[in-house]
Length: 124
Image 1 (tube, rainbow, N blue to C red):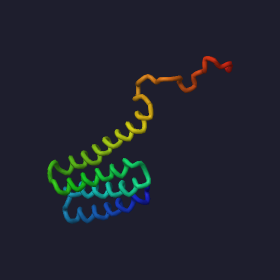
Image 2 (tube, rainbow, N blue to C red):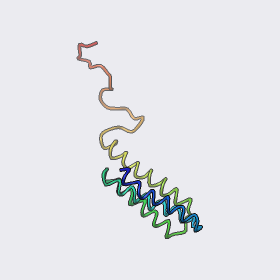
Image 3 (cartoon, one colour):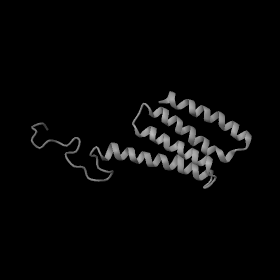
Image 4 (tube, one colour):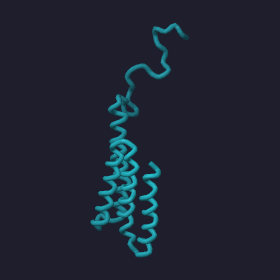
């Protein structure tokens, strides 16, 4: 995963310096979202199917941030890095925790507790 993620992040670091020198500060969130998404897509090839889809969402947000000046660079950062991580993270939790039969946090568990003694056991 790291070997696939590193090249787009390194390209982002190099292009960030170029964008800073050119005065393209408002374009940085789009660049970062686009290249981070590229890294997640390539790294996600070795992971769950949802991970490359998450990367595609970042890439789409990056393209939108570069193409649409509104709602502004700070909002694109929040939408991209905040909103997409929360949305896809919630989906992963739902798929791997809730659908696996685990109750939400704070809800009573069904079945015996871990470490509970079996009523029919002769062991103390």
